[in-house]
Image (cartoon, rainbow over all chains, first blue to last red; front, top):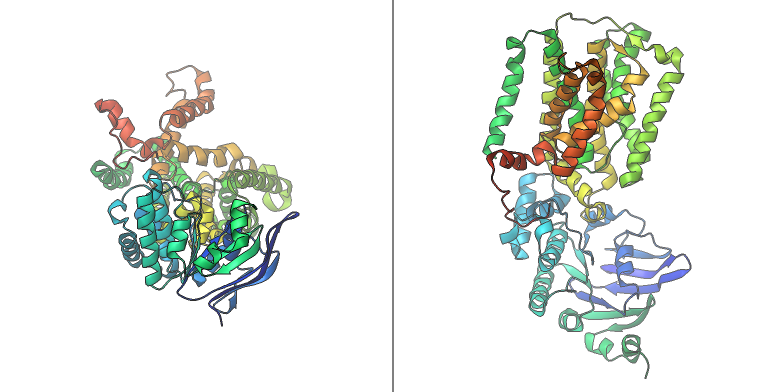
Length: 237
Length: 327
């Protein structure tokens, strides 16, 4: 039984196939990179995995269980957390309240949830800003908050959607460090990212998609040197 | 913050002692109505202010509660006080069904749907006059001639309602309600079933509004669909109470209820007989001006923007908020 498996998933928006017969597998404990040119369907894949969109075809298995067709919140309860590319801070709540709300995922006790939230915030180095309103955070901190909030749900699999975009090189470095730390704590990660330096640095394996179809899959160097991938990004000679 | 917690301690004490010092039936009546509006406004606020689901149909639950009491008397000859037991659960059940239908819609579309459902109930109770008494309404005889029992009952209801909301908002449910208000998609991805928790919020809200309705039947001794299912007397008034006091604050609707009822009574009595008669017609106009003023200058209501008000009088500039929030 594989940890996570997408079997020939397809998503049509009207006549457009945003994701087309895409199949891939993620092993427990790895960081799996998902790359591709703009509009190639990366975020759609995430929206399919976490149940935000219904599949047009195919199946998604998580720990051997079919999860397509389940509502988003149930998929989260089963252990798949996600962050949003366009961050969604709960603006009129403090940072601590944001994370506490999601820490209620496996408990009904306020004290337990709060303790968990504080722990996660310290882990994400946001502890010193826990009493700030989420609307007052910088973009870098908002992205940390996204990660903290999804971590507080105690996911086994975490979907990170462009958590580095728009950050300074230094913040990116801290981000990479944070994601490694998350993985080392036992969370499997699928990451969508445009910044090659980050992807090559982090990922154990990479899959590149274009027009919703798989172009290449393998070790970072293999994919980076794949002729189709280079063409998809840079165009043909 | 310290002043506020003092106010929270003293206000209930004043309300408890009020009838000992004031034995005018009229003033007692005014406070009874204000307390009833504390219940309705706070209930509306739980759903709209904390959970972000703006309802224009709270008259439905008020009416269901009122008619639960009235119809028990009319058809079964039972004491309308049984309505205090039946009204809440009935309104809650209806609330669940309405939520089941309307929570598929978000934001303004949900609000529009509640207007429509509200008018449907209004018309149904008007039309089926064999069952409901129709436009003739239901008339009963008040149990007590004194205002005192009604006063303490209303005070108890208001206390129970506010206390319940305080407890709920401190629990997991409260965190979930606010998360849904802030971003429903984010909430779902945090493991929160938006539908389930919106329904729970609506059920608590409709339960207390139904109780207030049953109380109204017993206290006023007369109801008809034009009053208890009224869009503007009940549904809109609930919203105004929330907006004036402070949407999404615990104590806002309680303060708003007193402001609204006092303003209403002041104008209805032509400023205690000092002004010409036509002033009594002007209370709706005054509400309008009041709401415009609050929305323009105190978007968070009297309670939410309390600091602004105190700074107005002490002449202090508004302190820049420490966390640089845009609120």
